[in-house]
Every structure is written in C-alpha cells, then in structure tokens.
Image 1 (cartoon, protein in one colour):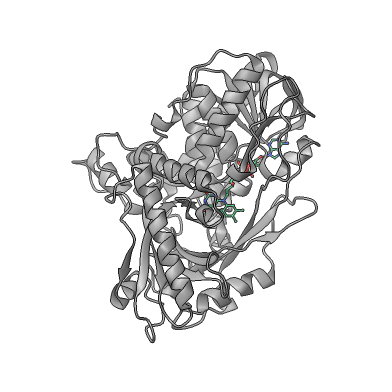
Image 2 (cartoon, rainbow, N blue to C red):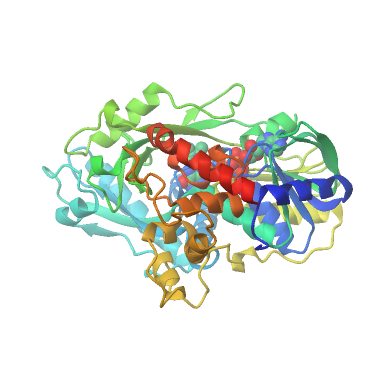
Length: 536
Ligand SMILES: Cc1cc2nc3c(=O)[nH]c(=O)nc-3n(C[C@H](O)[C@H](O)[C@H](O)COP(=O)(O)OP(=O)(O)OC[C@H]3O[C@@H](n4cnc5c(N)ncnc54)[C@H](O)[C@@H]3O)c2cc1C
C-alpha cells in the first residue's frame, strides 16, 4: 500500500492514534488552505494531523472557477504585491508542483458589437501588464504564450459559438486552468499523507484551543481530545463558528454549467466584459466531462453560512445575459444543466497580533490573514485564494512554529511535486510529460492523464473490479459523455480517502456538478464504492 494512499482503514487507525499521541500541529479544515498547511508542516518534519468535518474539498475549494490565475485582476485594484505573488505561485504550480493538474488556457476577448472600444483597449493594456507579471515570475512563453491580437477566424476556432457578424478580431491571452479544484486539494492531502500527516475526514473540531481541540467523529458520534503543540484554524468561511473573534464578510460567486456542445465545444475560454465595466468579466470556461462553466458573480452574502450555498435566479440570469451579448445564439435557461455557488472567505478586520509581541501578519491588501487568535490561541489562516494556497500555508506554518517554539526546517514546498506530477526532467504539460513516462505502454486516455498525471497507469493497474477501463456511464442512457472510468471510482476509495458514493460523485470526480449526470450513474458508482470498501 502506497504511503500516499488514504483509506477508511487508515483513517480509523490514525484517529485512534490521535486520541493517545499528541502531534506537533493540528490543522482544522480540509480545503486547499488546510491541506496546504498540512503538507508544508509535514514537509518540514513536524508531526501533523488534519481534521475535516465533512470531506476533503467540501467547502469553497470545490466551488471555484478552477483558475490558477496570474493576478491580473489585482493589478486593476492597485494590489501589485498580490498580483506578483499570484503570478509566482501560478509559475510554481505549472512548472514544478502540479504541472499535471494545470494547463495553459487560451482566453478569448472578442472585439465585437457587445464589447465597447474602451473595454477592448483597457483589456489590451491589462493583458500587457499581465504579461509583465508572467515574465517577472520567470514563466516562459512555452508554458504560457504572450497575449496577442487574433483574427476573427482564430477567435471563432477557439470559441465557435461567438457571433461572426461585427467580429473584427479578439484578444487571446493565456492563464492557468486546473483540471479541477477538488483534485488539487486531494493531491495536497495525499502528498502530505505520504510525509506522515494524518488526514482525517468526517471529524469535526468542536472546541479549539491553543494546544488542542475536542473532536467528534461524525461517523460514530464518538468524541476525543486531541493534543497538539499548536493548532491552525483553516476553516475558511466557517472560521467564525470555531473562533468568535473572527469577522468575515462572505461574498457569493455563482457559476452555471452548460453542455460544451452548446458553445461548439470550445478550446478556449470566452471573456465578456460586464456592461459598463472595464475590470469585471464573465467567463465561459471549457471544463472536463464535456461541459462549460460560466461565471462569476460577486454578491454580499451576510447571515449564517450554509453548508452548501445556493445560486439565485437573478445571478443565473445575469450570467446568461452577459455571455449571450457576444454569442451567435443567446443562451437560454433551458441550456443550463447545473449551477453552483461558493462563498469567498473575505476577511473583515485587521489582525491584532498575539498579544505577546508576535506580529499579526494581517494584511488585507494581500487578501489573506495569518494571526494568532486572541480568542482561541490557535493560528488563523483565512482569505486568500486557491492559487496562493502555498504561500498562505508557508506564512501560517512560519507563525505556528514561532508561536509554539517548535523546531522545524524552512519551507520547501515550492520544490515539492504533488502526487502525480511527472518527473522534473520531462517536458512541461501533463499529456506530453506523462506519455513520456509511460513510453512503450499502450497510450492512455487524455482525460485520465489530465486528472491523474503520472499516476494514470497506476489507477488502471490498481483496479481489481471487472471492466476497469470502461466508462462509468457506459450503456446508461444520457451518460455516454462521462469519460470517468470504473477504475477511477475504485481508486477514489482505495487511494483518495472517499468514504461513500457522494465523496466520489461530488469531490473525487465532478460528475455531481450536473444533477442529471449524477442521477444517471449514482447506482453504478454506489455499487463500485461498496464493493471497494468491502475489499479493503
Ligand atoms: C465562486 C468562487 C470562485 C473562485 N475562483 C477562484 C479561482 O479561479 N482561482 C483561485 O485561485 N481562487 C478562486 N477562489 C478562491 C478560493 O476558492 C478560496 O479562496 C479557497 O478555496 C478557500 O479555501 P479554504 O481552504 O480556505 O476554505 P474551504 O475550502 O472552505 O475549506 C474550509 C474547510 O473547513 C471545514 N470545516 C469547517 N468547520 C470545521 C470544523 N469545525 N471542524 C473541521 N472542519 C471544519 C469545511 O468543511 C471546509 O472543507 C474562488 C472563490 C469563489 C467563492
């Protein structure tokens, strides 16, 4: 059994161990931030346990736009530091830590009737500045091509649904796109587990303290006390529920899902300026499983934080109307096959420090907050974004080590490839790199390689159930477009810590983003999951 494999049995054993053996660092929250902290700390040689109330990537980390972005949007607000950090972290992801999970995505801003001249010119200046950030980060144009003006024919080739009449060209600019955000979280957690971290899902922290927490196993109802030298609170938008001193200002971002065929199976993303704005855009992003996701909104979401935020009808209408401005045939509500929303954990106050001379590194301009909580004594790490999870984790572990007087080496996660990353010497870009690893073997399906990188052959080889390479929707009406193999369902249970069919449908794969797809394969996925759980 690989050291990186997460299983139900491992969870049980490690939860027992946690009841009797203190750890150096306890992380609460299994989103991208918590998983990044667990990896950073484990890589520095600390003993680590991460507890997550539901499942890995249960929260905001699965509702993002799935972009590893270069910080262009932060330039618009004058946040040069954040913009540079974002571009640097995109570079790290695309060239060292996760080149298998992040690809270069061409983004097309059509210069047409629905886009004002001022919007086109401003976008061109923005893309030019974004390109300076790319160069500053050391990202070569082989990895991310420079922005350029394209002819109408090329724009239409990248996004066939764009209206041809009045189209006199387009900006084409590249950014990083994750195959899936939840897969990044799972890869982080497994890489951390490979370095000894305990990754414990279905475990809720109910009482956070400076040196431990009360934990509840939500599968059995049992409670235990975990002891740690330091606790890191990475509960995102739920941070206020475990720390009364935290003030967040959640903002809801909504996406809709449409079949890729409806936009002509685009190879690039469509970027449409919001009417009257030169800095806000709606994106139609090609996604796996023959889908396009269209987002994004930004609505204040005060009040209690729901487990799963719901998109609203006006948000959906706004997205459809905005993107339709540049389409040959407007999108209609009937085209929508799914919709999802996430809450950005925006921080609403500056950090006060720890009251004992340690600096609170609150810095709203960096959009993430790392501080010792005056209320719980734990280190809070909040805000930020998916792209910069690694620097957030570094800051949090630096403060945790200092605060608790731990002995630990420096952060080196920028040079630590995640599970599935192809060996360094191979060409950048998942398919090229991974096919080179497996030279001589039969070619692997590109979709499998895009999701698992260098582990793609292992996913097939590890399968014990019949028909491993068959698509899970094979023979099921309306599910023929789902290219997820039966082997991936089994792998989710035997290596990725999935504990039930929902974990597989909604987070290890993203079949569940479309309710009809979910319903079509729910039965077969449930059978494979049960069988795999029984065998392990
Ligand atoms: C709509 C939208 C689009 C976005 N798009 C992008 C993008 O394209 N690129 C980008 O870089 N960023 C993007 N972001 C930002 C990014 O998604 C978030 O900043 C990031 O995912 C936050 O991760 P997190 O780990 O801090 O929080 P979360 O992912 O919410 O994780 C917190 C976890 O803590 C758990 N938890 C809560 N309470 C407890 C408890 N008591 N005990 C144990 N566990 C607990 C929750 O179950 C949850 O899993 C987007 C955000 C939104 C909302």
